[in-house]
Length: 413
Image (cartoon, rainbow, N blue to C red):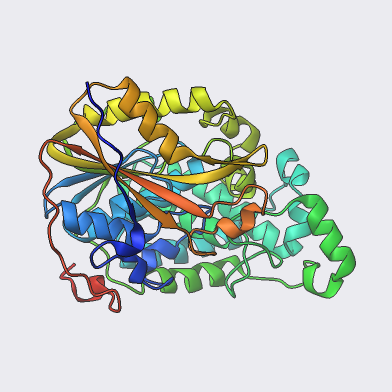
């Protein structure tokens, strides 16, 4: 078999390219909780609009906080998201299965009353290990502990609306547990990941006025403030489907028109460690969560796993259909590893299927665009490669997108 040369195209040269969108081109639901390496909404929007139509099913096998399936739902498609990380899964479920705003407001008011009546809660061993007393005013921390207990009770409730509201409030809380926004509950901290206990102690020693948890922040008031920001934009009429499986074991009962996903970048992102305070709030130990997530430094094992996942994705694609994999260039042992190029070559060499590589879109990243700046110079990502696969004869629609407007504001949602 003669292999065709790989076609490469710079993202900036795509017609009506998503690179024209501003950093803040996003629906307010995508501000529920910041997370390292979140999918940019404008990138997903571009491919959803050009390769699918309303009613089509769109999936993300490593969905994170659910940007891709939410975008599909927002524009009349059926969004399906799969994710193993508990904190990301909570946020994705909030986006894809949101309760009515009236129900949420009523629930938050009721939760506030229950917090006032609830007896004092003790911080557990893991919370002490994570240095929560260094991050929060004692009264704020007590309110966090009470809310954590209340949400745990409501997750066991048989009432669907109570569960939906509890999950949404939980997602909002994950978004304000740490950060530097007015509604953030912690000392000044990165909103995408928690900083280490040693770092906190160092900052409190150098800048006690700024980093000592001397200011009380009301959990209830912060939740209300966050809720107002999140519901600034209309929400979709269509809810999505949420799964929590290993990508290799993900067997949805659907045939997809498009899959768009971003697999882990070898061991670059330490998702469980970065989200250890959020995982604690969910009653999970980050060390145990880390063991269940796919992370390896073995490049061959990594590529073999992605090839198997691609074949799994292919089995769930209709014909014609498109599949997009976003992979960044990473630093490993002082060398730049182009994961996308390596996977493309491995796929061409080892696969004999209908799914063929159409092109590689080379996308230099903008600092801050997907929060790669906080990975450090040694392991930061500066270029991403979008592997575009086609199954059957795929036709790209000529859709003109105005990147200066926010299109969901005028949708009938």
